[in-house]
Length: 298
Image 1 (cartoon, rainbow, N blue to C red):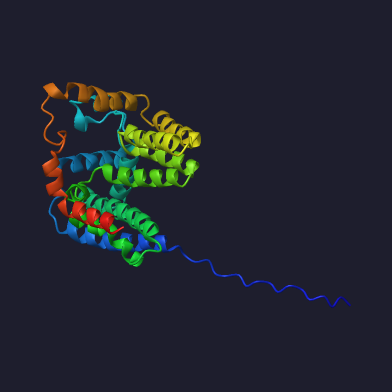
Image 2 (image 1 turned 180 degrees about the horizontal axis):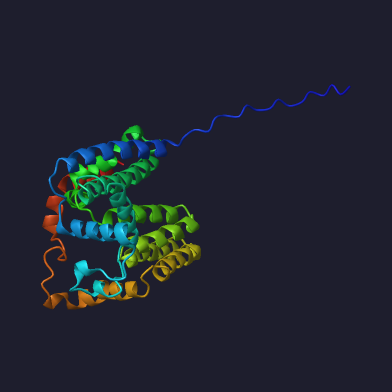
């Protein structure tokens, strides 16, 4: 007989849910309930652009992706459409189709969509805040960060009440930058692909990634070519695989290049004009005070 003692098997520990994921889920649920109550009590969705996006979603829910959209017959979008936010409209169309039988119809779908997109953004912010605060005093309260941001920064809160693709785009931007920071470049490519389909200004994310690439290269002597290559692949596929290609490229060029070249002779409204420094400080004063206090305390 072999009397050699066999090593005892180690008990398998149950897999624990990451605290940052729990923080994100908690923020999502609380934000969804909060936004549902706020938007449900309002007779209208703020901003006329919100109803444009609902109209596009209604068209997609009824007839599929349109080649022409008569709702904007006086614009370039009439021919070939070139939907600038096709992913956002597609998701919104799913909600419109689900609530088609409701007496409120598209309006109810719009309110629910606004609450869902806002809650998703809050979940991502809460998860990232909790991960950044791990090991620090009060880390368990990090899930409250997006709510504090909503109360302290009017520019951020202003975005939460409008049914616009920027809500989805900001969520994807945060996920893309997180993937880049962690070196998960394949996921970065996926995020860049989705961002390109969700928002017209894909070049904004590309610019941020380029700055990050240059900073790592010159300051840290790390040239992360994989980041640029996967991001470029994601952006490229998002443009080429767009269902309205190449009309989407024409719309992008007009909105993001020609518009800014000619805005000096156009009545573009105050939204396009930059904030003055005093206005930016006044609108977001509590946020800047809190940020300064935290910086000094660290």
